[in-house]
Length: 216
Image (cartoon, rainbow, N blue to C red; front, side):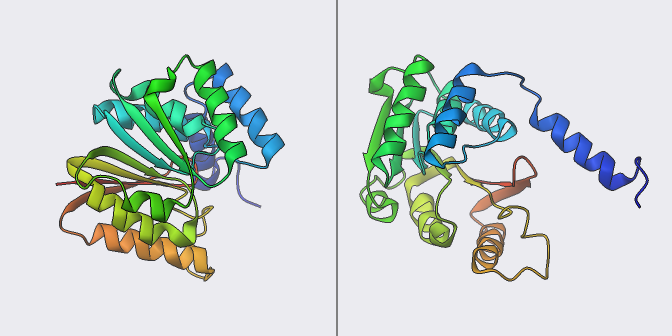
């Protein structure tokens, strides 16, 4: 049995504390309740807070999100983005987009600041402007992430930011024995971005991993 004050126990306690740093958030809590009804797991409290800070630090005005979910991540991004920012969010499920509209309305986001698109993300991304975006968040379809990353890097201008949620694949990436296809895909994506001389990258332990890359 591990001692209660072991480094592993302390690390987990610290992670949990950090995840809950921002405290109660009625809008995101309501979105999570809708997520439970739809079988969607929104971003964690810690990820939501981090997205807000990252959007604020990049002064983002043109944002793209792959994987609308129930709007928790989109609300978080727009809270930090420039007041004139517009978020393009892509999801194949119309029910998810309807839930997201409610979350945006609950947070007082004008409809003019969101462009919600129902469709296949790989196809939609190809139609978006080259070097026309400040921030891209990928939060859907682990096996399709390499395709999304390629399009995202085309869409981002110098100084633009790419964020990949669940970059540790439910905390399986650090475990060498795990060889599931999704885990191997995320390891390859991490290696590809880390080795790309056009980018500066970091892996944050928030939630189940946020991989952040900034275009030089």
